[in-house]
Structures are given as C-alpha cells and as structure tokens.
Amino acid sequence: MNVDKFRSLFGETFARNGPAVVVRAPGRVNLIGDHTDYNDGFVLPATLNRAVYVGVSPREDGVVRLYSNNFDEHLEYEISARPETADSSWIQYVTGAIEELRARASSRGGVERGFDMLIYGDVPLGAGLSSSAALTVAVVFGLETLFELDLDVVDSIRLSRLVEHRYAGVECGIMDPFASRLGRRDHALFLDCRSLEYEHVPLPLAAAGLALVLVDSGVSRELAGSMYGERRRECDQVVAAFRRADRSITSLRDVGDALMETGAAGTAKPAPVGGGAVDIDAESDVDGGVLLRRARHVIEENARVLRARDALQAARYAEFGELMNESHVSLRDLYEVSIPEIDTLVAEAQAVEGVLGSRMTGGGFGGCTVNLVRLDAVDRLRSHLESAYSSAHGRRPAVFAVEENFETGVLDGGK
Ligand code: GLA
View 1 (cartoon, helix red, strand yellow):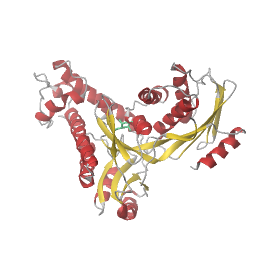
View 2: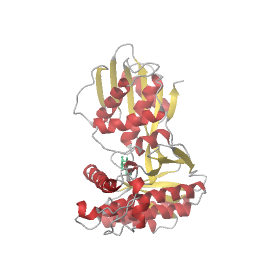
View 3: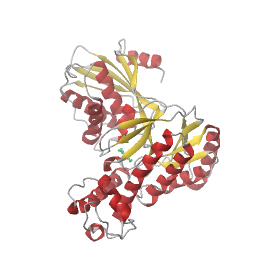
View 4: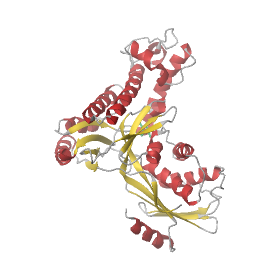
C-alpha cells in the first residue's frame, strides 16, 4: 500500500489530519524448520512482501477508535475498559495487544491516552503466512513508536505471542512474531528458539536470480488448531519419558543424540543421554512408534536447519533446496501434518525445471507450499501448477512470487 493513499484513508476515516505514525510489519514464510520452535529447536523463516500497515495518532482524551479497512469494521471504547467482545478476531488481537501494552510498565510511561488507529493488510488470511502475527506486531510496534515506549525488542515479541495465546486461544510458538519483527530485507532469519539468539542469513533473492514462490492450496486449515495441540502433546510425552531417566532433559533438543543413536526405527527403546532405558512404546504408544516418529522429525529437522543455514551462508542454493525437499518428506511421513493437496503441489513443483526445492510450510493441514525457484522458472512453475492442481483436485491454486522482502519499520512519522 502506498503511504500517501494510506494517509488520506486515515484522514477520511477519522476526519482529522495524520496519522502521526505509519508502520508496517510483514507476514512470514518458514523456509525450513517446522514444528521445531515449540521444541526449543531451530527455525529459518523469511519475511514476505505482504504486510500489515498501521497508522496511529494520539488523542487528548482516553478514547480508542479502531478501524479495519479489510473488514470495514469500527470499534470505539474507553482505553481503561477493554470491551469483552465475541466479535471478529482482528478485534481480539488488536484490543488484546493494547491491553497487554498498557499492563507493561515502561520507564517513559505507558499507553494511557487514547488514539485513532487505521489497519490495513495484504497478507493472505488463513494461508499459514502469519497474518495474525503481522497484525499484532504492527499494532505493538505502532504504539511503541507513537508513545516512545522503551520496550526491549524480545519482550515486545513475547508480548505479541502472549496476545495469540491469551486473546485468540492459539498455542503458537515464538517463530511467527520473531520473524515478522526482526526479519530483514534480503535475508532469512535463523533463530534458536531456546536461547532466542538469532542471526540474519543473506538471501539476496533478486540478485541471486531467485524467487520464493508461495502456492496457496486453498484448503482452509480447519484441523490445524486441534492437530497442532495434539502434536505438541505428543512431543511432551516423549520428553516426559526421557525425563524419568534424566531430570536434566527438558525438551526434544536435549534428547536428540540419544534418540538418533538408537535409530528411532519405531520400536527402539532409546537410551537417554544420562544412560538407562526409556520405554516410550510401552508407556503410551499403541501404534508402534508414532511418538518416536514425531521425535525423529523434530531432531532431524533441527539438524537440517543448521545445514540449511550453512548452505545459505555459502550461497549453495541447490543444497538448500534439497534440504527443503527432505523436510517435506519428514513432515509428511514422520510428523504427519501434510495433506494430499499439499503433497500434490510439492511433487508437481519438484518436477519443474528450475525449482530448487519445495515443501509445505508452517503448521500444516492446508495453507501454502514454499518453493525456491530460479527467476526464469517462475512462470513455468505457475502455469504447470495451475493445470496439474486443477486436474488433481479441481481447483486453481493462488500462486505468488516474492522477489524482495520487507522488514518491520516506520514508513512515516516517529523519531
Ligand atoms: C504455526 C505456529 C508456529 C510454528 C509452526 C510450525 O505456524 O504458529 O509457531 O509452530 O506452526 O513450525
């Protein structure tokens, strides 16, 4: 969205000049490392060229006026009395973020005065591209900028995740708000989800003659919530089994090597790092190794992320693409979070010349695939998928290419 257009939309909406501040926070696509963030593991997302824009101006009174351009919905309330509303979810996210920011003491004061806020976004909704993280990050960052809040950036990211947990009931990990807030143009973001140390890894798409192509299956992620919770609990069960033998184990990150040594073939009784036998199958797994398959995915995916980071750093894009392909197989067969439509999109993409890698991305059960593609192959991939997906599943996928990515920042105003 063009900033001038956004400014005039703000003026028309609230019948005043402004906004004082315009910020933007992008959606994200995870390149590799899925279902590792809540297991204290590694992820490697990148930001998109799709974002949420927030324009905000202070008021003299304590009234908050919100307007979502996408939903054409207004809300007005006293800042001290967050409305308990069952209304659309964007309102839950926005008022939740405001409430949490108010609750944070800040050395330069908090959010006490009212304000007018305009929100517009072009991150596809429900496609697994973190439109909600982009929304929350944009609202928090907009208010931080307007009121000059002195919030540590990692605390601000944690606050965005808390909003998802507390106000939207989504048990997501830290990856999405982290990627949206700290992802950088022409880079992917390597994140250690345990220490929260991160590193920007160069991904100069256009200069390298590459694009990220996102392909939306159009399958809504209905199962995503319940199955996501189920996978988290499965991982917790494996960790609990190991913990009985070794109290120092707190996540799958700690049991990695031991599990790998035993092969995790499905029936093995892996020896934990501290020694002693752990009988996972007898404990809870009637299906001969489901839990071990889940664990194996997480452990091997972590190792793949490290290799992928090294490959990217050395501009070894073909190797990076191979790792993406391997990641998909693991998510499909071991973690079992893919669906036939997504598998079709991945297999068909991998058959197109100039596609270096293809995989599902995000939580699974629908949403998008992410493809690393040579620029000259983007159109070929698009037309191939449009016809192959239509004949296999009777619908056209939405295909869009990312040739440059955004980063969270102030577009206008602020200091
Ligand atoms: C969803 C969650 C993330 C992450 C992915 C899977 O997108 O929001 O925190 O767990 O699933 O990698």
